Length: 230
Image (tube, rainbow, N blue to C red; front, side, top):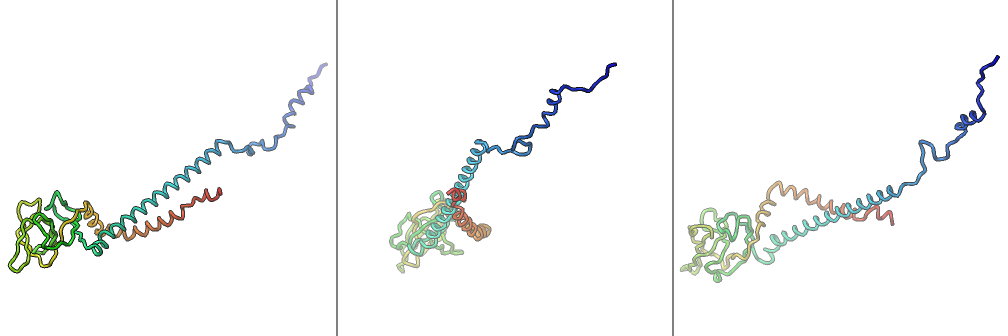
């Protein structure tokens, strides 16, 4: 009488139990890894740091250039329109109409210098107060010069773009009159724009902001990453 046995060859048992004896090598587990960072990762990190440093440097240069430009323009405008007339004696006024176009257009600044009345000639452009109405300041060309019995000088003027002579005769009360020297294009429009309340408020609050930005830019000038690498 034969019986059925669960006998298993010894080599089979060894084969089945062998995996249980195996142990994971240190650092080879599923949740840990001691592998060193790849060269590509290090290279990408360095490139990112270089690009960031370059971007910061470009921003610093831009802010510095804008701050310097605004400062130079402000100083030049102050010297030209505030200090210059007091020191050098010339006068500035803004052309409001097109009566002298195309030589002098609306919005342009007329620069004049005091000239002896005896030196005024027909064809000169002068700036003076008209003798009628609101006695506004006018800049027109002299078309006729008259000598009065009391020794004073009177002139008739005309705008280059006007059809007729001005309907008045202006008599000079002093010894000099302002004669046109040069014209500054677009400057008058800038001056009128600066006189607008919105622009003035922007300048009042914007100027300190520009100074703060310039101060921060000077502090930011030294790259922390470059300092750390040193």
